[in-house]
Length: 277
Image 1 (cartoon, rainbow, N blue to C red):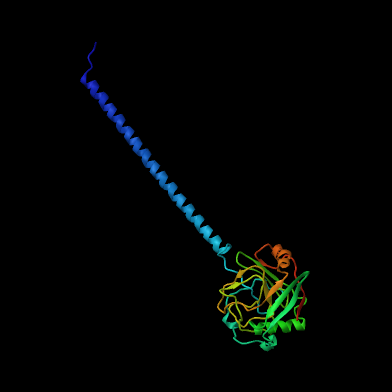
Image 2: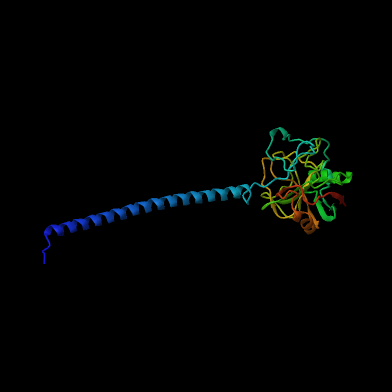
């Protein structure tokens, strides 16, 4: 039998060492590639999470519960083409601090409660006007009722969001415009901390102007929060005593004509009667 030479054994050992080295280098290379891949995946995941968080925040403040609440407003001039949702940005040029036109004396409100009825199509509401808490605004509404101003006027705006639920009525042109030669203030009996309870009746006005109340009013159908603006809140003049469920079911439940949260009601609504005792 031939004897193996030491050189053969040495060669085998070197080849084994080379194979071990190559295996370790391959393993190291694989580990490096895996770390790079894991870092890339982690970076992509972080970007996606940040993007989703940003999108969620935008949705919250743009269209969800964090969105600004639309305020009941009226435009300053009679414009049949005016959008129902006019700007609420305070305009110093229209904040006069004085009444415009012939405004009824607050004494007309007699400091008492005025029961009555308000008919919106076939929906009849029992109402009470609070002449003690809002004498100037109630005096205006009482005189408008007596003169027949409201009959035939429409309810041009319905708001139904997470925090605001109301129907606005009484514009001079059915499109949200205020009377060009009639406006009054100040704000009386505003909601506490911006909250107006279901059934409340309050006056609409321009944003930032406490002396821009006219004859437009809004009916709150569910508890609503309307944060004060630069001028304050909205004059609460009374409440609905009966018929609120019918108003919700027949008009509010139908939503707006364009399916938005703030626009003309899908059910065309006209004031067919307004009386007080």
